[in-house]
Amino acid sequence: MDWQFVCYPKCGTCGKARNWLKAKGVFFTERDIVDQRLSREELQDLFEKSDLEIKRFFNTSGKKYRELGLKDKVKEGVKEELLDILASDGMLVKRPILTNGKEVLVGFKEAEWEEKVKI
Image (cartoon, rainbow, N blue to C red; front, top):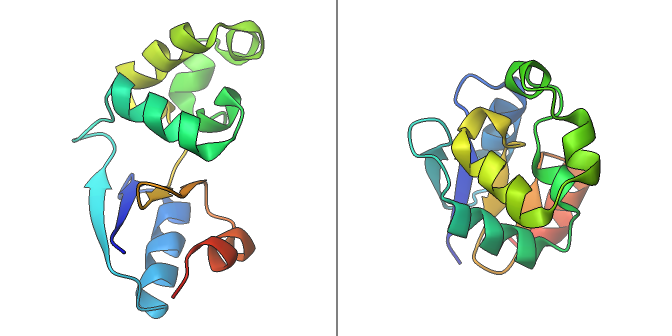
C-alpha cells in the first residue's frame, strides 16, 4: 500500500515523521505542501475520510494562522468556508499528513501512526 506524505520540508515535526517512516521501511511519496498545495477537493476528501473535526486540519501554531486571526473563525466557521481557507495557503494546513487513500493521519503522533500504518 503506497502512502502519500504531505509535509513542509523545513518543519521539524515533518522531519521526525519522515525519519520514522524510513526507519520502519514504509514506502511513501513526498509532497511539499507549499510547492504542491492540496486542492480544496483533496482537502475535503481527506477531511471526510479522517473522522476528525475540521479544526484539526489547521496549523494553529503557524504564523499565517495568527496573522489572519483565524482562531474564532475556525471555532464557528462553516465547513465549506474553512476548506476554502485551508486550500488558499499550504502553510495553514496542519502537517504532516499521511494518507493511503483510506487512512488519514494529521500531525505526527508516533503511537497513532504505529497503530494505523501496517508495516
